[in-house]
Length: 151
Image (cartoon, rainbow, N blue to C red; front, side, top):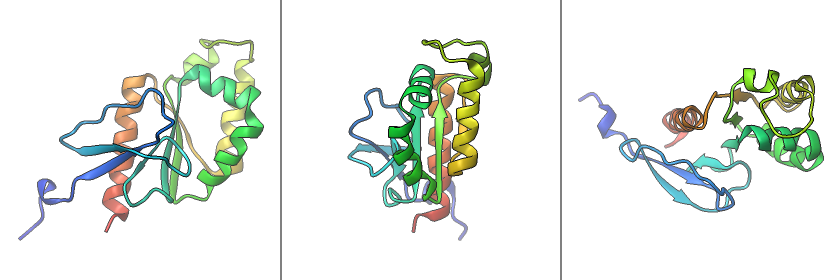
């Protein structure tokens, strides 16, 4: 008999204990639990060492890539070794280009650092437009990884 969506094992999204403003995921699609993760803010139960999402507000992203880049490098090295990892920014690229963030960083410097993350560490950066869209994207990303790689 063919398997339906409801027959699949429900995914459990793992939220890092250091995540200060965690997303709320759709409980019909995934359970959620909190525990320390080796890298990133979100992962999937059983895939913590190979799948991760690092969440950033636009202000945190700008501050991290401009002022705390050396500290962030270690996190990016870990994420770069994962099968699937990304950085999700709760803002759109137009927000970056129009300097809709705190601080005096030039938009080109922010964009250049985002591109450096993609090219140097092979970790994609997704500008999702809003917190709600970033939450939806994160859930979909983690559920897709769960479907592909959970046994």
